[in-house]
Length: 342
Image (cartoon, rainbow, N blue to C red; front, side, top):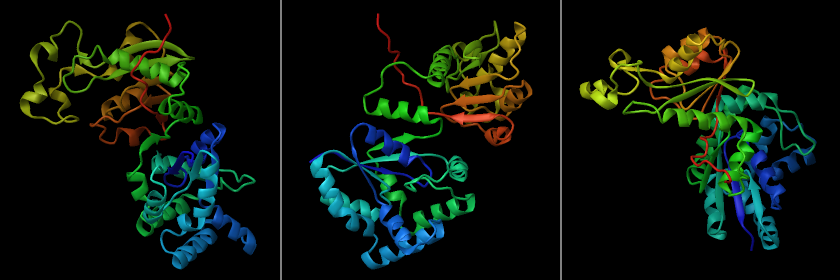
């Protein structure tokens, strides 16, 4: 009996890309939804979300909410006896329970991607010959999300996942993350991880008691300036005097006028101004998304792209304010280790 990994996630999350990764590693492939597509073809229908939904609902009415697990069970047993197997598209909570009872060794790998990112990707999809990737309008995708969560409890298997990965960045970012998770990373980081690791290193200089934030501005794969959050030059900082906001019980993201710190993004921009470096058209890498004030300054400075790996608690709509103005990307947190050979 080989390993069985079921890839779960909402429509457009990147399940097919993850499944392709395992296929390239020699795993056999089974797509749960192929039963639906086969019937669409058999009936001579156009493969649309509306036609497929009617067939899915009919099959579940006939076989119960575990329909696709039951109907695919013979194939799963056959393939798993031959070797390792990756399953694309386990949908319902009942399907998960049936499979887990039959195959206790089953592992769930959940792929998470924000709705707006998924909807944008789905609109741009091009139909392939196997119909694994088909376009969907934003309205169709949102309707499918709600239907799957409310009617088949699709969130259940995602919540029970043994492994969770995020798919916010490029296809290469996703592959590198999969390699890291499964212990196959070769050691050489991509450019995004390279600069975000620099930002994390810069953040170690922070004098803030609450959040260590680091920022790096780049152009053409070259570092121009860096910045971290801390008190103004030659001024006492929170490491010396303690945090004013802590003393007054002010939550993170509020009461910025009480804070001694200049934010990391601000310091990186100030360094450019101090040394006469143009940062128009550059990319800023930062450990956190910006606050609203920093978002305004980033936009005003002409920075074209902002890349981070986690949200700042005091966002206050900053991300929304930047959308459509500059390119915003959130990618997986870089590895905490520095890997090199002496």
